[in-house]
Length: 262
Image (cartoon, rainbow, N blue to C red; front, side, top):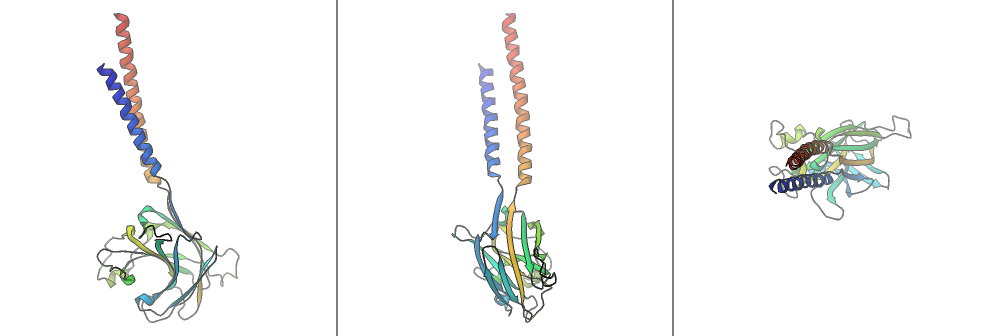
């Protein structure tokens, strides 16, 4: 009787483990958010006026193309203009966006003259950021190449495609200096992202109008490492199940042999 109960308990334990594994695996789907052309978030023209600059930006948008006409003006050490995405969903369901759900980014861009652009993620820092003050948000940056179509003779396929890990974003030295840090403290606060921005690169000529074109922006996470770990756990569960079934068969045969002998 005790052996029979033990076997049923074993069956229930492995059934529970497999059910728990399936529950975790079902949660491990691909995380994906498309900023453009899907227009998940509010899009707005962006310039450096919030930090005392004089650059300008005008944004035009169709179903397939986002264009920022920019003009970078002197007056600040770090000048910029471009387009921003307010990371609060259009239906106001969540704010801020948790970028730790993603590990990769893909973006397609072109430009009139500049040969590089700068991507920025602005996050809410619990130490340095003040509520409602854009200029105090922590800045994470990544430079990407663009294709200056004036230099390419108006080639039809002029967009530069960049794919890279979000871990490649870095806090720039100018931001560290602005808050009194001598070196990078290694913090990003990506779980509290407020804005994603595409701005002019260091090659942009000051005082000369330029254009930035964005055709596609997407963040995603295929959770490959987590899925690999889950399959390792599944293998362990199945291995344990096989050992358990072998034990059950051996004990059952032993009892059957005892009955025959008696």
